Length: 184
Image 1 (tube, rainbow, N blue to C red):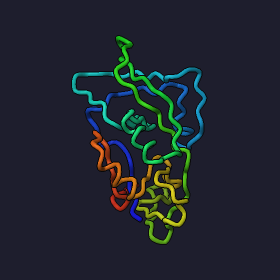
Image 2: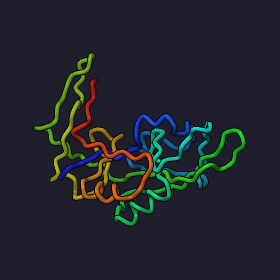
Image 3: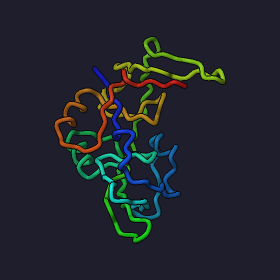
Image 4: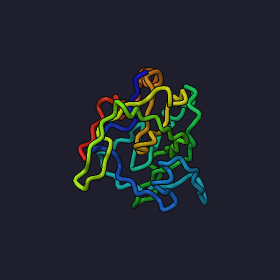
């Protein structure tokens, strides 16, 4: 089985600049922990200019999915995402510009193929993964998950990628895991 990094197209110079509200803890969200919000929908302020494009994934540190993306993933049987409604609002007028869902992927899977993956030492002598490979036997047959060794990455399998590729999404990236390379 082939695997892909699932994210927004990066860099996305037309994405809105979003301010994460205090109640969203970046680390806990990436680690799949259920957040506690005082009220929903969550409001995120955006600096907007005329070139801003609201794509189907916006990732200001935590993934925001459009209604279209959420509906597609729900329809394809992806059940390991907790969704929280988000209103993106203009920081000046406070008008709602777009509605999204904060997507908290609840499964973080330790599925690194240690034998095939490449490790390097940083300038400080600390080992890091510069290229990784997934051990399919350790994925629990999930079609979408966070990668335990690099939890900022959402990984999807080839079957889900092929199904999502048939939908006309805007600003979505399916980068094969072979293309991942970290310099240090």
